[in-house]
Length: 189
Ligand SMILES: C[S@@+](CC[C@H](N)C(=O)[O-])C[C@H]1O[C@@H](n2cnc3c(N)ncnc32)[C@H](O)[C@@H]1O
Image: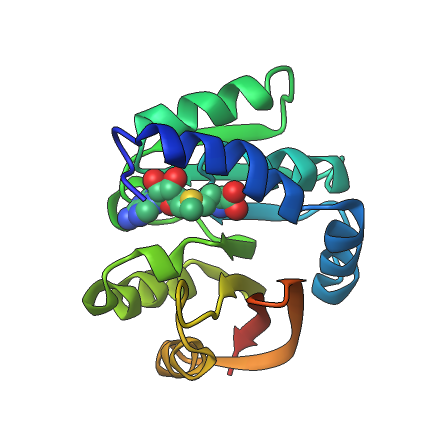
């Protein structure tokens, strides 16, 4: 996906496929597996147009959501979709630079982001995210694992392990026969 100047197909896909993906069933499963209490301080890496964020925010009435995205185009859409929510903060910039050094989070969400990042940069980014976790904090990652689009489960597990994280739980979502995602929940080892 082109982040700054997406083409018409990216915009259509975001409005259709991404929206279709996040059904109430999908979000309910996510809430239970992540064991969301609703009062967490959450960092969402790569919020894009806010498709996931606008559903997530409804599950954390007493929490706080910090949405980070490198693309002004997409984050402006997210701001629009989350208008009126006073427990949401938006940070425009690269995840590696934009979070104040002293900030820590209860939960960090990576949803459909890492597979789009060049392979050589993935480990460095997850290392930074792992450093930003509270002592009992957790990272949720959900990524497509299809040969045509996605990244291998082994690579996700390898990156997490090398960042000093252990897998507490995982599950798969199958949207179409040919489209599956891996969802993992990690905490400090
Ligand atoms: C495919 S979108 C996913 C959007 C959203 N998480 C969802 O599930 O609908 C990936 C997003 O990650 C953002 N992104 C990629 N690299 C980034 C980086 N280094 N720092 C912050 N955001 C980044 C892109 O701009 C894009 O909006």
